[in-house]
Structures are given as structure tokens and as C-alpha cells.
Length: 316
Image: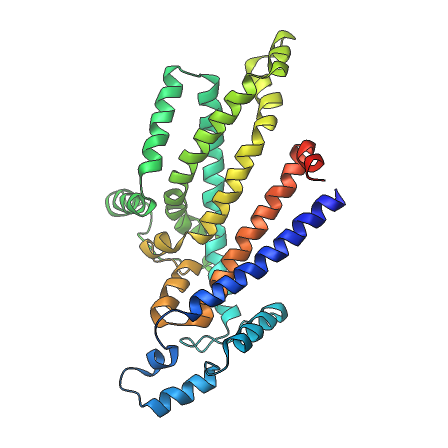
């Protein structure tokens, strides 16, 4: 197990280093001058050059990359060009919205997808199976921002059950915060739940054809006991793979939904920073999202070994 974890840790570190290089280089070649944008179009060249020096934009690219990486390792993410605030404070403040939103969306996705996938597999080629798979196909085709607008029209405009947008803050109460995140979480979960339900159904159907399932049924176990006691665990490998990727996507893909609901999350911060050419905020936020994706994949790899020891054995 230790060798398995060591290999995964080495892969994780190498991936993070590669991601940092890509993120830095991509932002370096973007057109525009952050100092010019901050000073405005009427600023004199001397004023722009002075601000560029103050921000460190006149340093060689290699030096800026090294300063950025050493700052990341020490917890110093620098100062935002546009907000004149430490980037770490901005990011931590926005993560208190984005992370709970992603967890809520993932929880809704998991409950809906596992229930629908197992139900459809247990009724293979029957009306329930065909109907659910038809609904999942519709769910996959629906853009989450369009579904978010429908939710606002129904629950905010017509029924007036929820606010159309904004976030009250956790200091006003956890229930009020969760209530504000519920509609955005549902809009994010619809597409992911549809995808995961289809994968769950396929994985369960594949396991149901195995000999040990027929043996369990022959011993007198009910279909429900066989499904939950024997089939589900063996079908979890592909399901967990997709769940890990989906959670990473939820963390990184909230930009549009956060803007629809006017949520002060990390996605909205990235959107605003791109508009302001606040490169240091964009760079750190994108790197943070990349690190989250890599770490989630590492956790999924570890769960592989816990659920199915054959994965660990084949890797060593």
C-alpha cells in the first residue's frame, strides 16, 4: 500500500508542477497590459511604467514564475492589482460560497443518480428503465445556466419561495445560506446526475451478469439484498471515477451559475478578475482549481484501492 501511495503522490506533485507552468505561460501570452488597464487609457507612459515596476511586471518571466511559486509554498499569494487586497483573503472569502455550493450539488447528484441508476438497472428494459433513461437524456441536453433561469422564473418570480439571487452570508444563519445555495446547487446537479445515473445503471447491469450474483440469488437472497449487499460495491469503481471528475468539474465550473444567481463565489471572482486584467488573482485562482482537481483525482485513486484491492495489486 505504501508503494501505491508513493507512486500516486509523485504523480500528484509532478502534475501540480506541470499545471503551474501551463497556467503561468498561458496568462503570460494574454494580450493587454495590467498596468495600462488599471491606470486607464489616458495615463501617461511614465505613469504606466511606474505602476508596472511597482507590480513587478518589469521583471523577467522566469523571475516572476519563481516568485509566484515560492509565494504559493509560503502561503503568500500576493496583492490583487484591482482590489489592493491580499489574494489569499479574496480567495478564502469566495471559497466559503463555492465549496459549500459544490458539496451541495454533489450530494444532490449522488442521491438522485444512485437511486435512479439502481432503480433502472433493477427494471432493465421495463417501463421504469426506459422512462428514467429518457429523462436522463433530456437532463444531459439541458444547459445548466438555462435550467437555472427556469428555476428562478418558477421558484423566485412566480412562487416566490426563494430569492432570485445574492447570498446573505453565513453570519446571518446557516439555514439562510443553504437556502440561497439550493437553487444554484440543483441547476448544477441536473446534468451531472443525468450522466452519473446512466453510468450507474450500466455498471450495475454489468455486475448483475456475474456468476456470484446468480449464486447469491440461488442461496435465497432477495433482489434488494443482492443489489445493495453485493452488486453496488462491485459497481462502484466506474461510478466513483465519474463522481471524482464531476466534483472537480463542479468546483471549477461554477462561473456561469454564480453569475446567474449573483453569488460572491470563486467563479465570479475569476470572471471579474479577467475583466479587470487582474492577472495575479486569475493565476492563483486557476492554480487553486487545478490543484483541487488533481487532489480529488488522488483521493479517487486511493478509494480504488480501498474498494477493490485488485487495483492496488495491479499497480505494484
